Image 1 (cartoon, rainbow over the protein chains, first blue to last red):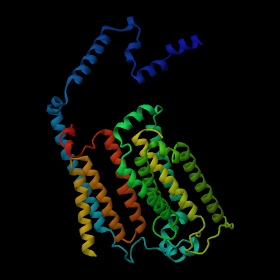
Image 2 (tube, chains in turn yellow, brown; image 1 turned 30 degrees about the vertical axis):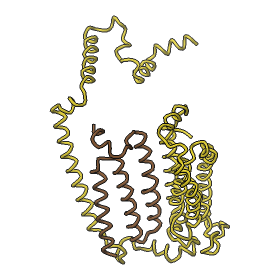
Image 3 (tube, each protein chain N blue to C red; image 1 turned 180 degrees about the horizontal axis):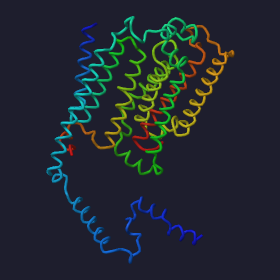
Length: 313
Length: 88
């Protein structure tokens, strides 16, 4: 075992690892006698240069000629880029067709089909919900996957293994046992949560749906956390419930919509009842898919907040 | 209705410019919130209530909460006192 370790320490990979980690300079690994005086001189020179750079204070840096020139060019360029961007956008906006005109290129057979057969085919009174969760359900699946990827990136970057230090800094910065916040939250939290569920469950009947309802639910959860602290919030929302809810919602969405697209493409009967348009239990898969999207969005937003604030559940 | 639309669009431009001009980060986040609120009204006037709800919930609610948390973590959430100090 020791021999393997020695071999590894003599290898190039070990040296490269050391250099990447910043523990050693590339020239340190040359044998002492191989180092020419030139090498030594360059080492001393670079050390001196970096020291002189460090000794410059921000005030003296801003007074150098290069910095002044650079900041002037930077300002002029930013103005030029802004003007070009604004002009091109305004020219595009002027040439856009007017809103709701018959001659718009978007006014073709696709929206005609949505308007004429939407209710009949999807069972949703809200045509927008019928569009995004039935005709174009894979678009929405992609969007919720983007959210899922974002929350995983935040978890990878910000999750702290040791929570006690984070807890200490959190205590100093955040309110604890704030009476006004608690009293307001105990009235507002149920109202917000009920409204969020209403927006999600009524997504196929009126304006709203998974994304907006999920955002409302998430902000309600954040309010609960702010008012009652991490200990109480952890009983309802913790890492385990987050992982189970989000993953099962995504998997259910994928399987359900994959099934309906597969059967639709092969013209097989799906046996999913569309129900009576206008009822709360109608429009086939749209209601469960709305619930899935809403849960993913709510937990994503809550996790963002917790990760930004403390770095762990 | 046309006048209301015109006023709202003017307010949008004013908000958008003042977000970038304001030095105090707390007030620029609050102006950004009001930008999202006006944008939700504009969506409502353009007859798309779905987008209006989402804009109000996400733009005015969630994104500003995340901005506030970030500002607090960076120690910049102290009202009007940090006008000149953090310009470095």
